Length: 255
Image (cartoon, rainbow, N blue to C red; front, side):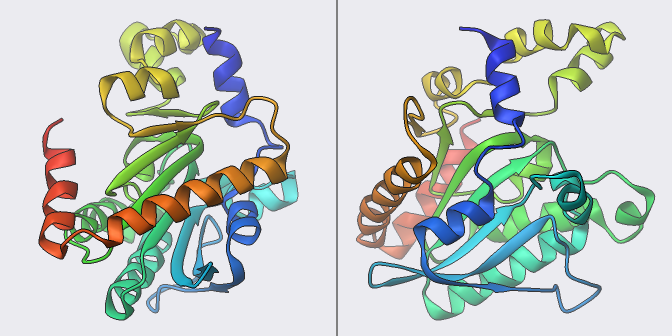
């Protein structure tokens, strides 16, 4: 396994984004905006779409595909209002009985002074708490980079999946290397130690499914994810509500 290649693939700017999956999988996807408190955060997208006959609330952390788009999306690093927008839409989903699907691709939450002043840590912590008890099924999919609490804030789910060439970790390999060895250039050595690839995490039970990308076009990959989602949501919606919430809670407490 070439860890450097997997990290490059996960961070590749041409990868399918959360919006690509939202528009490619769900019919009549309508994007909703704002946290009703401060502003709309372009790094977090959310809305409602149809998966067959089922209305679904779709959330995602959005990176750009160009420099201009990345500036608009803050390079996929959400501010607290992004997490609050996501929570607003999740509570709306709970009210109307819609399952929630999240697509995650972020190096982490934005660590700027303004974000901290507006309660970045509290916003992430509240999402973790509220998602643990949300009364609808939740499926989270790591589609690129899943970094730190910024990713986990949309990943407290009944099922956590990863695309094959994605990574999921407590912090970036560069950050790990800088802390452990005071040398960010040893990032790939750190990545080997951290066990951040999809198959390693599946083996450890951190994620529940790895979706293969090998040889698939973008459209084929979207179709594969769509079929997996449809089947899994059907299974989850058959579970009693108490069991759905208890299994989600136990899933994360076991770590």
